[in-house]
Length: 112
Length: 117
Image (cartoon, rainbow over all chains, first blue to last red; front, side, top):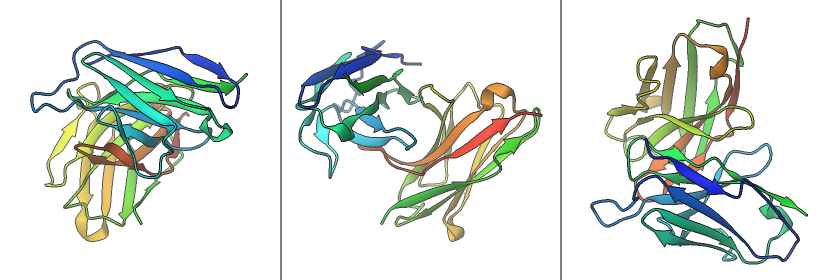
């Protein structure tokens, strides 16, 4: 199975600060059809995960544009440009290029 | 609007079988796939298996021998059955709409399952 390694495991930020989360894959996530099925999810405390970004960089409807995704192959990044209080929680990258779909270990974003 | 809701027992005895139901609304099970994902407390999610929109199924190989997913399209329900439960099967179980390009775009609230005698 594909292993996704997220760093850092914990991120402390102040409101308004910009932060980045890394997700590295044990193998390339480029599918033979040319798509890269790497998504980002946010799980707020006590809530189910919610989709933020799909296909590496496409913003899900209703998600603020302070969230952005980038990367290719095995290295991917989620950036939050100006953290807000509602952004606190655990962020997961998830891949579905290779079966079975697998999740990263998570990055907890907390207030400094 | 799209909604998914899990239901089932909160407590299961070791070695017994877990049966969960996911009731969906706002979309058709013959047009969209639904996956089951579980999450032990304080840990990351684990994909368990999928009911494809065409009625086919896919399973995580680590669980395949214990897991069965089925559906009733007339009731808009997807079912999960997993046998031989052990304490490390304790966690929150989610059903999620599973789209090819968007991945897991809608999630239920989850059902907490504790395996204990």
